[in-house]
Length: 363
Image 1 (tube, rainbow, N blue to C red):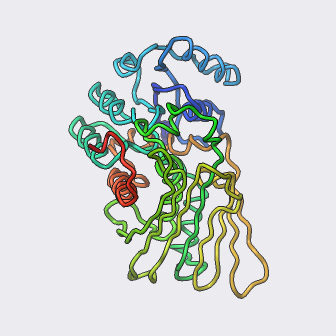
Image 2 (image 1 turned 90 degrees about the horizontal axis):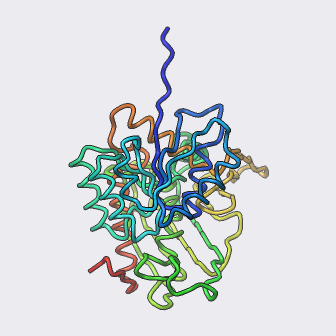
Image 3 (image 1 turned 60 degrees about the vertical axis):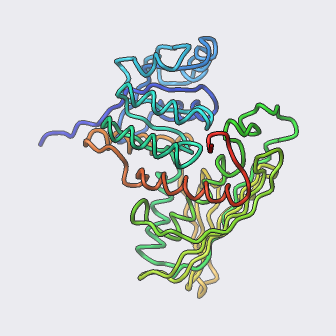
């Protein structure tokens, strides 16, 4: 019997901030359950000094066998590097669209941090470019690929442990010390796509769609939307978004109340789902990185607790999925299809428009 060859990807990374750092660290971990192998061959930064610091910091704790990447003081050199199979884009939101388009034009596959772009108009342009070029494209909504999320989906939609679903409450709050930040900070500058919704609110909306709908992309339902925002200097500091899903063949009418703020830290029990037979409480450091969940049935006084250990932060789950897709010739992912990205951008566009939050890219 021939042993199946594990797919491998050679990555180029754009950006050297926190998210790119954690993504790179994760993919360099030794993992016995890895479904793909990953190497980094190019880093693009705004300066050689920043790029070299990024590499020296991460590779100091990496496996001694992990080769060090070439550092470029621009992004286009990464796109044009013949050794790069796929580009990971971890720059501020407002730079995503052009970075994606440039990488795609160079014939590279792309994994771009969420949100893929500032709005749906930009997203559709990027999606069309990827399809025309025939390259893989995915928005890096890493939470969707956690084993915890697939287990939760199975318990709610396959086993139906808590019966028909009715309500979901999800909160993501971080104290970002807004008063101390420069107006040009990525979390305060409207030109950079600042605000709670695109930065962290998207995770609550994602969990609402995963949990209450259970489907993604063209198969997903379109909820009615109501919302309110607390707006300071043109950006949203706090959001409340209510999603109302109509009854389906398998579920009753469902309502999600999603809240996000950059002013306060959320409690670790950040999400609760209520059904006919009981409830599920999801807990963890944030809504982006759930650690486990508790099942409480109405007829029982006991709670069943499921916890999910993961090496590193968990970015490797999405990276492995991308490698498998590309190895099989697919140009998008079934868990995070391109239509799901377009629908989420459309939803957030509606919320911003209803509350008067406008970015320069919306013109």
